[in-house]
Amino acid sequence: MDFVNRSVELDLLQSALQRENRQLVIVMGRRRIGKSRLIREVLRSDDVYMLADQSDATIQRSYLASAAAPIIPGFNEVVYPTWDSLLSQLNRRCKKGTLICLDEFPYLVKSAPELPSIIQRLTDNREELNFHLILCGSSQQMMSKLVFDQTAPLYGRADEILRLRPMNIFTLREFLSVDAVAAIEEYSVWGGIPRYWEIREQYKSLDEAINFAILNPLGVLHEEPTRLFLDDLRTTIQADSLLSVIGNGCHRLSEIAARLQKPATHLNHPLNTLIELGFVRRDIPYGESIQSTKRTLYRVSDPFLRFYFRYVSPNRSLLVLDDSAAVNQQIRSGFAQFTASQWEQICRESIHRIHPDIAWLPAQSWWGNDRNSKPLELDLVSETADRKTMLIGECKWADKVNPEAILTELKEKTSRLHWLDGRNIQYVLFTKHQQSGPEQLKIITAGEVTSS
Image (cartoon, rainbow, N blue to C red; front, side):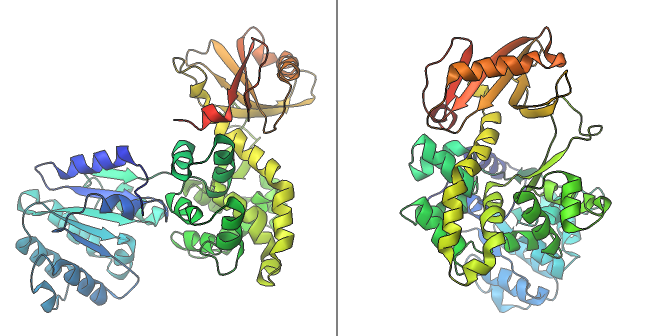
């Protein structure tokens, strides 16, 4: 299995472990994002790695003792009655600079809540500590609580905290060796999760990978959302319901509440949890405040979950009955539109490619009423950091477009918005393929967006 490039994170981790003082490093991020793979890049033959599970604390201690036995002969021949006795003995017998990694650390804490306090005492006496310690976990909420909660024993103790994020589309295109258009389509299904890319790579085509890895009830990713949710939620029912509703077109809180037949006030907490986990995002029109606006839309932010809850979740009965042909027909007929929506989001995240020497503020869409109270939408709006120049853009996922007509339409739209009066405006079109167009319209292609 190739290591998917995380050069920044790897450099930071290697730099920390080369310091003279013993380090406590936290590595966190959702399941399959590449935490364990990153750690394996810095592990040496005389380091200790333990992957925890949900066994009893006594069993877990025996696992760690066995993992340490290759570098400390006979270490697993002793029964350690507590975590304190095990870690203290490990510290006494390992050589200076040894790296100890406890992967899926939240599982250990569930069976031994005292463990963070024991680690706190060890790390508070760095001059007596012989090993570096990496604590790694997929439960984002628990890992955050362990290191960011001011009442937690490990608060303020970590020397480095690596929160791994999904990877970008440039790396996906390079990993799968596909052209720009295919990279956009692939990203719309797999998103930025390296393990999903590795699964995709095992198949000859995107269609084949979708069929065997996702649609097939025996596929490796068919139950993936349940695994993701169980890392952080007591039950998957509410998350599954919310993502199903949002993924199939309900984006306003009132619509979501009506579909689920629940009071809107009962949904704020679970929605905020899904936002914190990176599964849902809250969209507001450009220039408005999240605290004051009433025009909020909720969208599935993770591409894989967006695909899953659009095509798999509503069709479970068909898939169990081995009727994937009907589902495949749905995917084929709607995939261009599905990809177009993801393309818009990718474009908003790529505006720095228009003029690398201009500092554009983060782009968003805009929707609302114009000066005549008529509805109007813009795909992409941004402005320079000095607020002197506005950027207004259109994102088209089509083989053929008419740049002159698009520029005319954009100018007509901007003339209807009072908050653009007197502003210097630049226009941009994001499109699949290279197009010739009017000088006033900057055209950005999929190739430029997906190339690093």
